[in-house]
Length: 264
Image 1 (tube, one colour):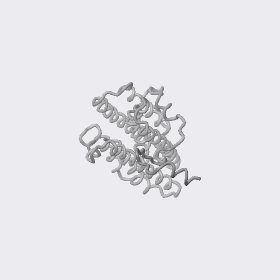
Image 2 (cartoon, helix red, strand yellow; image 1 turned 60 degrees about the horizontal axis):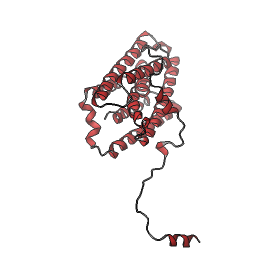
Image 3 (tube, helix red, strand yellow; image 1 turned 45 degrees about the vertical axis):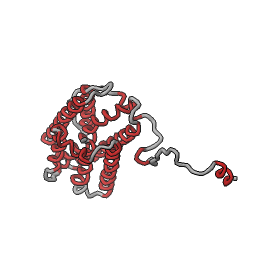
């Protein structure tokens, strides 16, 4: 219910928080490209909802759950801050490192567990390529963050570092509540909430270290190695660029003798 809205929030971050602040053409093209990619993700997950015959009301049902609504509200509150050099750095950490780069991954894991057991493999392709995209976005934006800090050394102080740690801790806490909600609603085969929470902490520390800070979640080993195996397995087509096909039964007409006669 929340996944599509999560990608909408991320895309909004690129358009509303980053594009107005970075005038460099190369950076703007990168940001526009990332926002466009989010549109593909949104369309893909919307297609899943429509394929299952779920009503339009599904898109707003996340507001009925405090655990989902709080995640959405927290990101919106961060994006409403006035644009300063320090708030821009905070936005990059919140939207790119800890939303794209961490928070979405609990949902990714739950969805990947289906193709892991041989189910919903088409959806698994969507998820796999989404993870590839989100990881690339997070890494590129973290590189932009490091360059931005290098060019504005005066903002890299204890106050900014403390705020980034607070953002990371708060977003992990919000994700814990979301994970408890999800696993409280349905039993997931060969996957439990504790492992997903540990994986989120593992990812959070990787993002903190990439930002130039220290890991504080104390999960140094990947608790779900099968996730990396599924993401890194060789593939021969990109779901988003693959031609759609439909199966048909009894759709041919005519006689095979006519076909061979024309071929001759």
